[in-house]
Length: 165
Image (cartoon, rainbow, N blue to C red; front, side):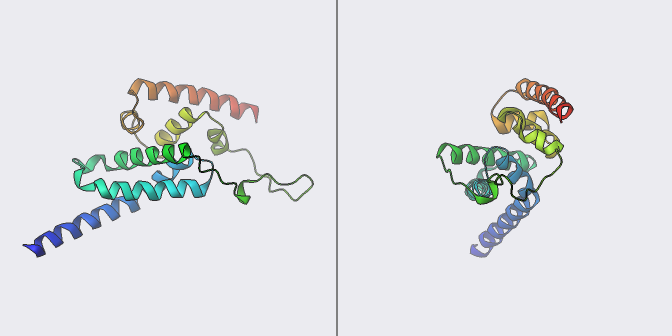
């Protein structure tokens, strides 16, 4: 009997590890659009992974695993931001005047990053993570119509931002 339980636990561990591996980039992007630094996003993803593992046995439908992981990650990112984990990373500092600057062309990603948070999150989850509006609504705890509205407004703002540059 003990061997059967060990095999079941090992199977669950492998399924969880495979799921996190498959969706780790999506989890990171979801956290990164909400947080100010890569390190904070990595912390949020780590916390989300731990919480997801602790709750994995209660997951009813593994088909909704990606959305479930994203929702946990978004919640962890919001909590991380509320805690005020503010650290200035030297990578995030603006170059000094007169110094050798690393100039780059204004890209679509730069425009997405300039969107208001609500629009940015919806845009990243929809276009970069291929989540449906229903999945995004569930992950963010809002109505599906709200997600569609945010996406529409985001597209309008992106159009304006890209025309300006």
